[in-house]
Image (cartoon, rainbow, N blue to C red; front, side):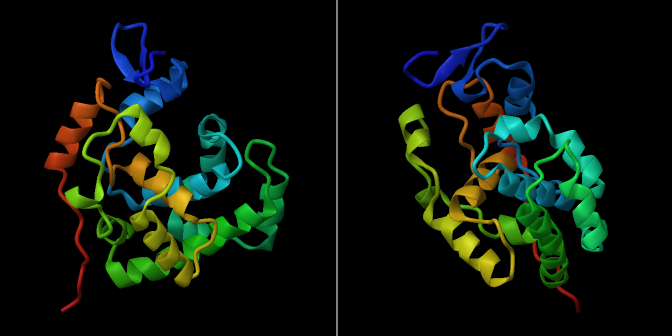
Length: 215
């Protein structure tokens, strides 16, 4: 790894160094992280898994993600919202996931809150993309030093506050910013990363979801 925060891969291309050339982590970096997402199931999954990550590494969660999906009905919001006390006990005993009772209960709670939000906004995507930072809210350049200095932002703090007001849990400002990075609300691939311009193009062409109103 060089001082510019980039790492040379086996294919000869330079990427953000945080994936450390680990195969599964590099695939996540290349194929998922930062690409704009408007699918409610994946958005719900990601914000829940970011909550589970608290105090752990994302790689730990990534390597358990299929177990999480199996345990939480693919993160289908309607199904998770119906989980009951028996499901909580089942999940607490599931060695394939992070067996944190508070985070398990939070996921079920958040599914119910997501249903309320979907009723209000039409989709979770419309809600979250409504918070997309404008150019004035973003750094002039995204280099390694800038990325390392950003753990949360004014916007992630505002989203966190609004979500908590709506009854969500395990959605602190740092968790929310990690969610924003992953789901493409911002492009935090650093300058010189082979993926950065590809993500920029995807964000440019991405059709932002809008709030669905009833007549």
